[in-house]
Length: 127
Image (tube, rainbow, N blue to C red; front, side, top):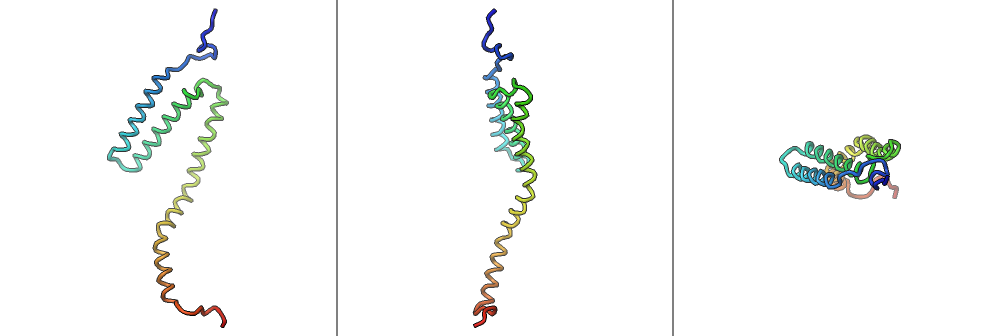
């Protein structure tokens, strides 16, 4: 009995055309969301969700992770979990940097005002 190449690995080949159509539909949805008059937070959330869905489809079918053992899936998901963890841990630091950058203009204005008022020789230096 002859074994077909698709059955040699123990799984049926996925329908790549259907997966490609799903990816195209998700891309069209991303374009609709990008140009929709919705709040920025909702837009970012929807775009990130659609990007995750597309990444999962590509990883599962084009990288054949759907047909691999669980150990390989854990290895593939470890960087995703690490990036998610680091993103949530770094958000407080990023928000303080944005705050400092936003108010930097006021600090520079105060510094220029003070430097004009205290012009002349340095009183801390002995002649």
